[in-house]
Image (cartoon, rainbow over all chains, first blue to last red; front, side, top):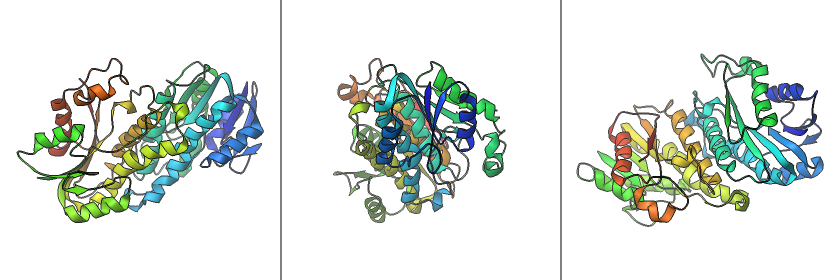
Length: 200
Length: 200
């Protein structure tokens, strides 16, 4: 199976890539690294990436920014960072990616636990994750040619513990193997329209 | 209690207004009707509205557009209709409204059943509703001065049955009194950070 992973060099992307690389052909994509580069907040950049990659069997996105700060510090423009990147970036990856995915293929997007269980300073990030959840459920009703789509929504992950643990008091970090399994369930399984929630 | 209702003349807004008008002072706001006008997709228009209304005890939003169409017909710009209006319009109403609401006051936003149970042609509308759900949960953790916030998320409502029933096969329309009760629970009750789901 030919699997294109946007964010293949990220904290989660590295582990997902490693867990699939023995049996599948992985096309690594990053903002600055990988075989191809993409800026997911830019639809033109997404189209250009797919023109280079050609058709694939699975499109995985483990990328997307959103601004974390107290609600009272967030400007309207700050909210649009997450909207343009993690939210519409992933929507556009599906919109445009439909033309570059083989019948029976799958999309796997990334949301996060904040959609259901936000913490301090995540009004923007939570909003974006919640939007992804509902988008995935809705678009699964319409995809054609046997295409599937799911979102992986993980709690604080083990490899990001140092960076994020102060934001997530009391959250038990999820082992990276378990996170990678969530992506595998979507890519290699048959589930469709699901929010695959991964907690420790 | 002084209650500002954006969308007071809409299908749901009329019934919510009627159910509160005997015991409370209602400030009706609409895009083209009401005591004051606002275009909620425009933060400047929101600020101007609040400058005219002055401080209130409750801010209710039963307004906001999103484009309904097949996913394959929706352009990136089409998605931004809902993002700018129903999603960021309501976020901005809270951002800016914080300066025009009395301590202990409440915000009541409107999402909808699509967040959890989308139907055909609602990739954009569902996404926006899901974003509102998560935003409400997140911002409730941060509001100060005893402010509360909730979202009402109703199924197909009785008074919109004719217009929308073909989109919602098998959805039993919710009686308008029950819908209005959901808003009352948020405005007059003590609940905070809740998604008040209203089904028949």
